[in-house]
Each structure stands twice: as structure tokens, then as C-alpha cells.
Amino acid sequence: MKATFFLLLCLVLVSLSAIAASPKTCPADLAAECKDGDSDGWEGEFFPGIPKIKYEGPSSKNPLSFKWYNAEEEILGKKMKDWMRFSVAFWHTFRGTGADPFGAPTKYWAWEDGTDSLAMAKRRMRVNFEFINKLGVDRWCFHDRDIAPDGKTLAESNANLDEVVALARELQGTKIQPLWGTAQLFMHPRYMHGAATSSEVGVYAYAAAQVKKAMEVTHYLGGENFVFWGGREGYQSLLNTDMKRELEHLATFLKAAVDWKKKIGFNGTLLIEPKPQEPTKHQYDWDAATTAGFLQKYGLSGEFKLNIECNHGTLSGHSCHHELETARINGLLGNIDANTGDPQIGWDTDQFLTDIGEATLVMLSVVRNGGLAPGGFNFDAKLRRESTDVEDLFIAHISGMDTLARGLRNVAKLIEDGSLAELVRKRYQSFDTEIGALIEAGKADFEMLERKAMEWGEQSVPSAKQELAEMIFQSAL
Image (cartoon, rainbow, N blue to C red):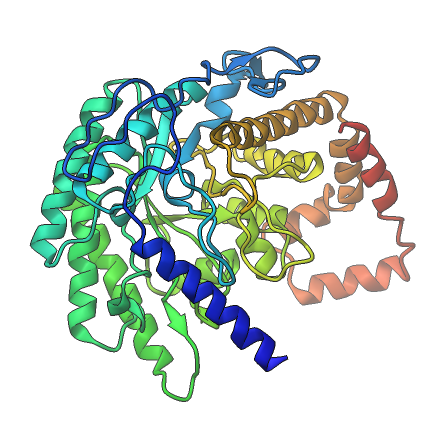
């Protein structure tokens, strides 16, 4: 078995070497010439065969159309686009290659020239906005190092980012803006011990400088939120970790981010994205409840909300609905990474959400929350390795948007029917009494409750009607 795995690893390394050594030219043609890395020139459209996506209704068989998402349609007092606030994620959509630990990249988009040059970064930005306009959304989100190449120095990296952001601002005009921006503090080797929780003070300082700049450009672009995903903020072993010190450093880092936000006049919401593990064995913001406790302990509750990713919720042993409700009831639900995982796979697969039942539960939380603004839904989801056509980028987003739109329509059915809400009301109706009101107001002490227990005697406990609740829910799907 070990020999077979070693042979497989060798074959992968050889294939990757061959790709790296191959000429850096576009391997596909979309009726447009691929320029070299010194120019961002491109003739014609990047998606010439793709029309602007329109709503055609549930009976349509056109894969490049919306069946359920009708942006201007009002449901439950808001337009669908205002409930959803959809956003395209730059990293998965335009930087995803299909590579995995066992195989080389499978996606070779025609506009790519094989480099990570500044010119190529500008071309990708133009691809991004053509995609957004054809899809019909008005928001996007990004990591700093996904949209602009890392430089040899921090100053060079900042200059690269400034140049690409200037183009992005020009291309987005007045109708498009970032849902959020963030700093990529997990990929570079300097962050192998973490960023805000690194054991090295120089890395801590570099991370602070990177967040400072990323927040500035998010503000410059009109971004509505700024996200912290601490992929390396955790540990591999407690034997060599001072967890108390690392958590205190993380809190201090986040407090400094709050101070900088206020100093530059950025009115966006700061968001923390919980995840239990991967790439670390244990990540400090394990789930919504853990993160809420962290924020409360360090006096940050009023400064941050949560960006809940469904796949992260399932990795932490919860459902997405549980994580959303935990965030919501604590006043922390700020944004949703719209994706899902595969129950047969134990890692973060970042798949587009296509389960109607799960989407309905997600939208139930969103409606109860009164919406997500200034947050929204961003598709932190990627094409499967085997999906390699340009149109697959559109089909995946259409499917994800339609699924959530269908979920919203189902929630409207549940609310109009009222049966589920009435079932829940009846379950707790014993608290809708004088003594129940005293308990909920914190005015019933144990002596009072003991007297009541003596007076009432043994209670007859009614059914919770779970199966009926599930029947009502399923009837709306």
C-alpha cells in the first residue's frame, strides 16, 4: 500500500513539474488572442457564448436561466434581490484550478496566460466584472492576495493591490460593490504558525499591516463588510502551545482592527467566520457558540458579527440551521457563506448548495433575522474537479441562486400556512401564564417554584409532535 501511494505521489509531482515547465500560453481559445504576461490586453468578450442570465420560470429547460430566482419579485415584503444580496466569490470562481492533494489542475480558462503577473491580475478582474454583469448580481467579495499578486516586499504587495483595486473601482462603477473584503492570512509560509496567534512577533506585525491595507481597499471600493477567517489561528498540538497567550493575542489583534476601522471611517460590519479545523487540528473560533463566548469574554460582542459557512457548521458537528440560529438568537448573524459539504466526505468540500430542504431551513433563519443586510449570501463554493467548461461557472451559480430562492418561496408558504408556528406556540403555551411570565422575567425564585410544584403535583407531559412538524415542513418543499 505504501509503495502504491509513493508511486502515485511521484506521478503527481512529475505531472505538476511538466505543467510548470510548459509554455505559459492559453491552452484554449474563445475566439480571442491570449496576450503575453506583460499586457492585460484581450480582444472581445471573455464569455462570448453566454447571454445575460434572465428569469424564465420553473417550466424553463434552459440551463442558462433562472427558474426560481426573480430578482424584482416581492416576497414577504421585500424584493428577492434584497433578501438574498448575492455575491460572487473571486477566489473559487476565478482562482480555482480543480487541483487537489492527489492531482494536478484540471481547469485551464482561455483568459489565463499561466502567470501570476500584475497584467494577468488585471485581466482576471475584467473577467470578474463581465461574469457579474452577465449573472445579474451587484456584489462580489475577495481576498487581497487573490486579486493581486504577492510582491517581494510588503510595499510591493501593497502597490500591486493598489493598481488592481484602481481598475476594480473603475469597472464596478456605481452599481456594483464588494459585499466584503478580507486579508488572506493562511497561504503564505510566514503564516504556518498562525497570523494573529503566531508565536513570532514579526509575523503578528506583518498580519496587522496586511489587514490594515485590506481594510483600506475594501473601504475604498465601497465594501459593506470585512471578514476575518482564521484558518491558521489554532493549534496542531497543545504540548508546544500557550493557548491562553494566543487567545489574548487574537483578541488584541481584533481590538486593533476595530480601532483602525473607526479611524479610517469604515462603516462596514466586521465579521468572524467560524470553522472547527482544517488546516489546523483545532481552530479557536470552532463554531458560532464558541465564537460568541470569545467575543463576550474579550469585550468585542458589539463590534463583530458572524459569517456562517454551512460546510463549516457540519464539520463542527452541527447543522447549518443550528449555526444560523445560534448566531441569530445572539444577535450575531451577519452574513452567510452559501455552500454545503458531502456527508460521505470529512472535509470542507465547498460545494454549491442544491438541497431544497436545507435551503428552506437557511432561509427560515434569514427571514426570522429580518434579512442579512448589510451582509448577504456569498458563494464560497467551487466547481467540482471534473467540471471544466466555462458555462459550468454560470450553471453552478444559477443553481445555487435558484435553490436559495426556492427556499425563500417555501418559507413564505410556511408563514402563510401558519401551522408550524402554531405548533411551536402550543408547545410552550404553559409559559404563557402568570407563573410562566414570572419565570421568564427572572422573578420566580426556587421557594416559589417549590410551592407551585407541591400544589400542582405530578405533571402530564404532552407530545412534542416532532413528526407532525416534519410533515408540515416537508409539505412546503
